[in-house]
Image (cartoon, rainbow over all chains, first blue to last red; front, side, top):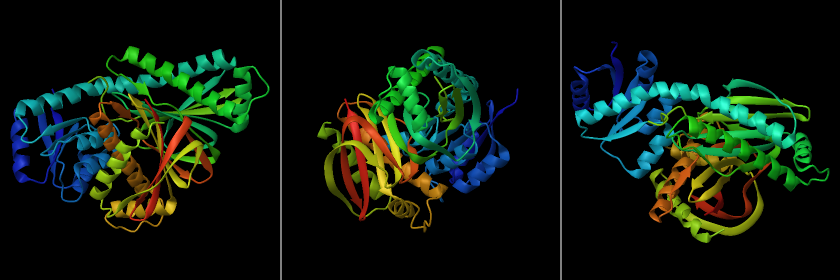
Length: 287
Length: 153
């Protein structure tokens, strides 16, 4: 069986030695050591390790910034923070950056090995998740388009690889929390939104407020149906939605905060809309 | 909206900003507002759920965002709102909101926060709440950041 390759990021020769000793004679092997943040980024690219152990205090940056750099190259990177410090603020920042686990020095070897094993086993489940979640959003969208606005829709999906997502008109933003954190954006032009609202409300006279509220509620229902289906399929996902935030204007440039995102484009007889849906590649689901 | 939902943010700013190298943090105006926040150039929207639900829009001019990003990057000059500066501002919002979440927890309210969404431009407006929201101005080394807090329990 191939060994699981570990990149150890730590500037202390003592810690490096302890880590190498712990992983010796196990199913893991140290494929490289990095002594500072930029060295870690370079070695991550070059060595492509299966998992990284990361010290918090590096000479050129902190371990969270370094993790962020690595995750920007590989959103599926698996990183375990191994640090003398372990407080709530650090945990919150680390998890939001995509770090999977925190261990406090001195680390017991059994604890380190268990954590590394758990993270590596979870990667398969994470892959299933990335392949699956989009289908739930697409079906919730089509179904509700038909039920609420009574129009058929044609849906195409594509990976969102752009640094920003530009909306013209209305953008409803809903955050997703739980084992996977993410974000959903629904955008629609003001003209189409008006027609759409007229169909939903069955009335010709709708004001700006009606339009914004209808689109926000539509997005909220799609999000609610999608995360419910996901929670049923992936036990322990425990996804929840934040209330919709609504932006409106001619041009809104939304920056992708390093999520694995897809654009879902919807064409209907009353016009088009686009849904952008993405999750952080970091925390493995249900693990 | 209950004013007691503001304090976790005020405390979070007072804790986080000095760690990032800012010298003086002062509270500016506090106002109850309705409807829309007009973007001053850089707006970061972040959602909360669980026992406190809603949205917070951090709003500032591009100039302020650049000068804050510069301090966060150890005084490196920031000429434009590039990827590095965007990342710094998103991280700031994330840190302040995560810290506020911890402060809510200390009061016995569990909250989860969403990833931040950073929006650029001054040609749009944001609705954080279906009812009223609180606009809190903070002066960080004389740069004004407006926190528009639309939360409920």
